[in-house]
Image (cartoon, rainbow, N blue to C red; front, side):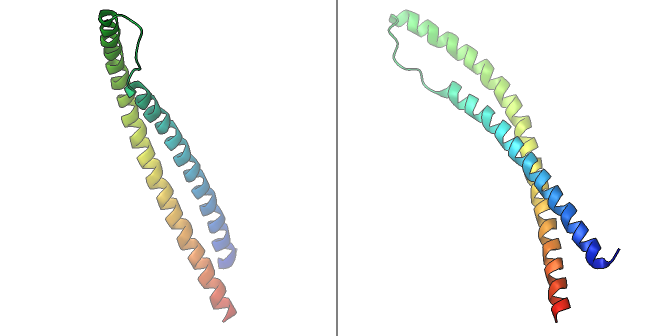
Amino acid sequence: MTDKAKLKRLAEVSKLILETRLLALETAARVRQRSLDRLAEINKPAGPTPLPLVAAAEVAIRYEVWADQRRSEINTVLAQQTAEWEEARHEAARAFGRNQVLDKLRERRRKDQLS
């Protein structure tokens, strides 16, 4: 296999790796965003209620207890998802850099052959 063919094959593999890493990043970002959306939904203030004042206060307290538990659960999951997202972002950036280097090498090789 010639150097030109090896470089071409390496560039193809690099592009496939980049596409895979970008897909993993997109998936991690989407999953993380769902958790952020759930957290935001829990934090929305309640609207006015037709309940008597005492009943409304009891409902609000029960909701806050439930919401605190849910926030805790979501934040635990979100921490793991954020770590996975950061790792996917790092891997995608690395794959992008490698792909750029190979593209530049191929371009330089083409220019050298035309000279």
